[in-house]
Length: 96
Image (cartoon, rainbow, N blue to C red; front, side):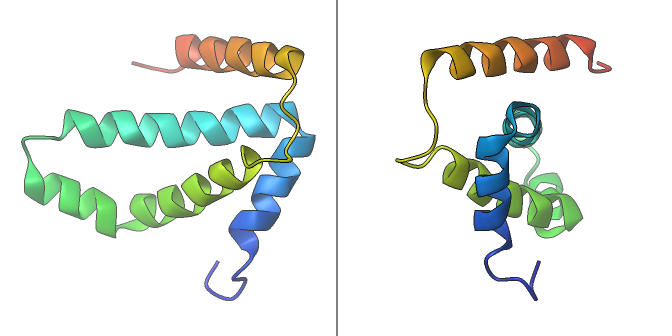
């Protein structure tokens, strides 16, 4: 990622063309946010999470997710409904 400064933008563009990738990207960002919030009282754990490989991947995925949701990206109601449905199914199938 450090060698490809536009990697997040390119990932975001690819995700706008692929609803499954878009849902997976959004799901990864959402799950990291949930994990980070669950560690609210444990600053050392949050720092470790944030500074480690997961934190680095999260920042890349977050930037790509924002690029995929940027103005000009496909935003029709049917795509949004399908992505929401897929994200809910992925959340339901994930190990707890």
